[in-house]
Length: 65
View 1 (cartoon, rainbow, N blue to C red):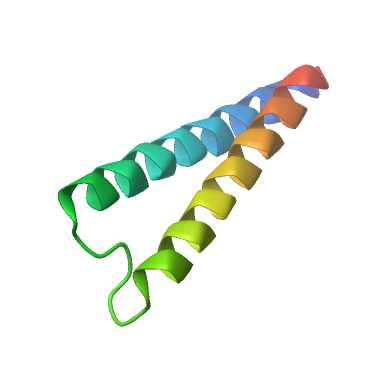
View 2: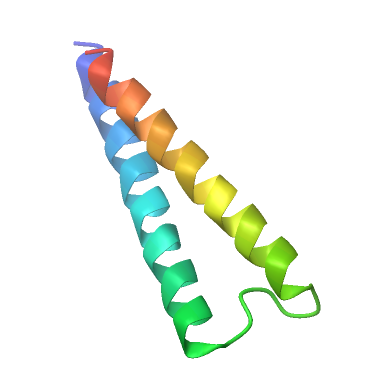
């Protein structure tokens, strides 16, 4: 009964992390800024870190069923 919210949260975290990682990689490959008004290195690092943390949280939620 409590596995429903864990599955939903895990799927949302995993989807967000994956899409953010792909989006960041695409922006970097095209030479476009990831965040407006922030240095390229800082914005790529922060976005990648957020994506990896989100993927980790998604994996954690999905393995705790």
